Image 1 (cartoon, rainbow, N blue to C red):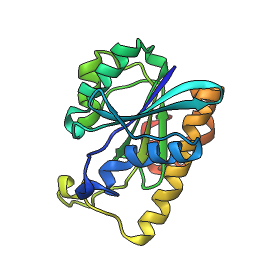
Image 2 (image 1 turned 90 degrees about the horizontal axis):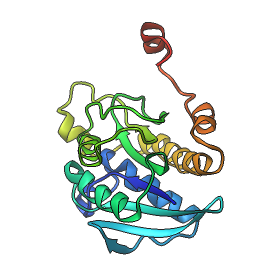
Image 3 (image 1 turned 120 degrees about the vertical axis):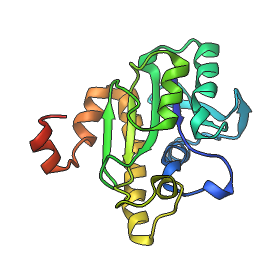
Length: 198
């Protein structure tokens, strides 16, 4: 069984904001695979179905971003899910707008939702997909992440959401390495030169 968790904030106030990329990707996965994410369990909206022949549980924690880990811990413990079968999707302002960064494991970086997830799970060796929301250009980062995008940004982000939803399907069908090779393609060249192969 796979648990696919998208991080975000519940409520109309936060719909379609930069910080809700995880929720939007889960909605896209649900639409692509005819899964209804409409049950409340373990402090989350959840829906179960199958992708590539595997049983999956789609999860949108309803605890607000900074407490996302509480919901995910309950789910992982209840279903006894292996770390490699947990996929977490979230926004990232350290990644170019519309770019995806898929990793097998890693730290939370500056993302409070992921900090909560790792703190509650007490491990970090699970796959994650970061959806780039771009740089705040020195704006207050809180207002930036809970803000909405303009129409040109939305067009880029909608493509990224579709790619991220497809990436989850590839991870389940063919493994994380295949998904990384296929979707980790948009990279900031200058940063790569400075840091090497990130």
